[in-house]
Image (tube, rainbow, N blue to C red):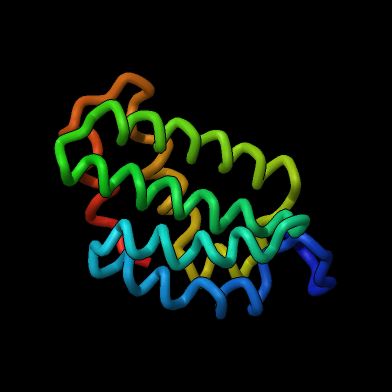
Length: 133
């Protein structure tokens, strides 16, 4: 996490949060596929900006939960594995900021993602499905 107020390109900021609002609202209403579609546009637009990994993580979790809601364990498992990889990348690139942690309950979100076992059953996604931004 950043411990000063200096903004660095590639770190999560207010502009990123503003872009995500519609997608996050869709996620919160369990419209996972629509969330994916909404955030994907911003992910594509922000090519080269490391903060796009935040969008990508939410996209992949939303897609995992879309598959979960259809009882598609393989689809859910694959997307969640990729989301976990993106969390590692976000940490490696120092994308996280206090704004990300405070506005998106990022620590709780990360913990719920990482709590799903690598070889999960459908029931293992339940707590993650209850998370709201």
